[in-house]
Length: 310
Image (cartoon, rainbow, N blue to C red):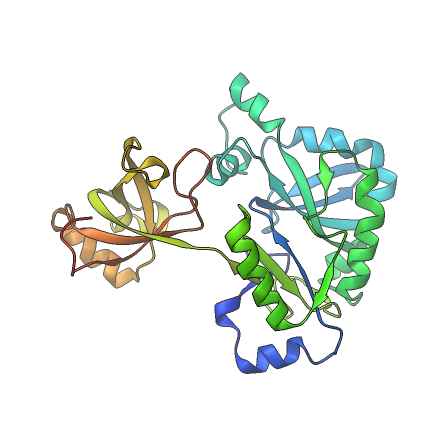
């Protein structure tokens, strides 16, 4: 299903025209921290709180959000809020699994407790009718103002992104400098840079809002392979690599599955010769090392033909 909310463009995919458009209004840019969570859409329908994914599917295990917001139904009726569901106790992969719309397995008591530690970080708000029409002409700085009026009344588990209360209007160079500074001093995923005059358009990936995301890279040894699922059945799905927790020489040596960023042809060829992959070194990128010592959203890139050992 196509996305029903705007999509963030990667900074690396902006061209010169995009950059000129971003600064054409002379109002500078809005910068805020990008949260590491599961994107959600929250609105009221038939006097009930709805919490759905960016593709329109209802999440599993979000009753706690609905109960939290039920006392505020009248305040929310006119709006649709976009937010990240975040959890400092769970990795993004674990949180995504518990929220998966297709999940049928009941939560364990431990998982229930972990989910209660989740919180919402709101980053956009559009009018209810405009959302379902697919476009809201209110500029982003206006939507952000409305958001800051509403969210603080929703309870302690509903908040705004860090720095959102002190939104920095800056130019592109200042955004780069802020990203560089935060990369060195903060444990964060990245920043979002937005045009304060940008309108809201469903499913559009425009240059009016882009992200700058941290990335780390490691050369790791392949110890196995996994077949893909669904449309990837019969071809390479994941590589199993060795990883020392926290990337420390004394960290526990574990095996982790890693998605591959290869073409269909490359996947097919690799699966046909999968035994030959074992023992080779592959470049793996990730957002960062997670709190439990693993890799956050790891992706396998190219085989390092110039290396035999890590």
